Image (spheres, one colour):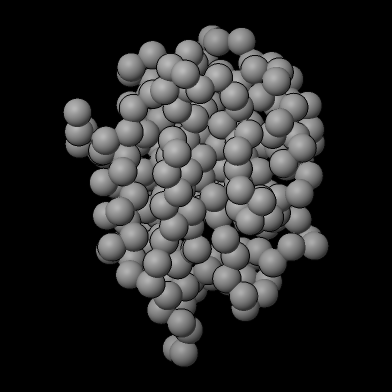
Amino acid sequence: RRRRVQVVAPSAAHRSIDGPEGMMARADAMSFLSLRPYVAGDDIRHIHWTTVARTGELIVREHSDPIAQSSVIVLDCRAEIWDPVRFEQAVEVVASLGTSMIDAGIATVALIGSDRIASGSSVAQSARALLDRLAAVDTNAEDRRPPTASLPVGDRGGSLIVVTGVATIEDHQSYGQLGRRARSMTVVEVASPNAPMPRALSRAVTTLRVSSCDDFARRW
């Protein structure tokens, strides 16, 4: 079946749109540095439209390096971790985050099930390709590995975001290994606030527990 995917723009009030907290990733990486007011001559591709919509002012992204960074979003499709309602919310988190990053000019890859969807030169076409895939995605009862187990080597160096349910200790071990190599790594758990939360095993990984897509948008 196909679903209608709701998109809710993340606030970007607590971290940059592609994940790093405090508006800055590791100092040794090419990264998004901050948001600042637009001045004549700025590249319009760097306008941060989410902030423009919220404030009414033209705001641009400033980078610590002129080379564009990349970001990877992974949707955990293991059937064993989801109930239908939470999975629908997770799909909307990926849609909201992915379309916002594409809109911000970030080179974005979404790993959804066995599919790899990479953004291209057209913002509209890239966002549509992502939303079309999410409209048809379903859980997989046969896959029991951590969602990053088969992550391509070429997708491991930028900003990495995993959208999952309640992560297990084994999941955190996998995330910790990746987090030490990535520019930044964030695990978004779409789950009940009362669900047990294993202690993160690596300081290189940030875990954000949210109850819904709206909750995610407020706290991102």
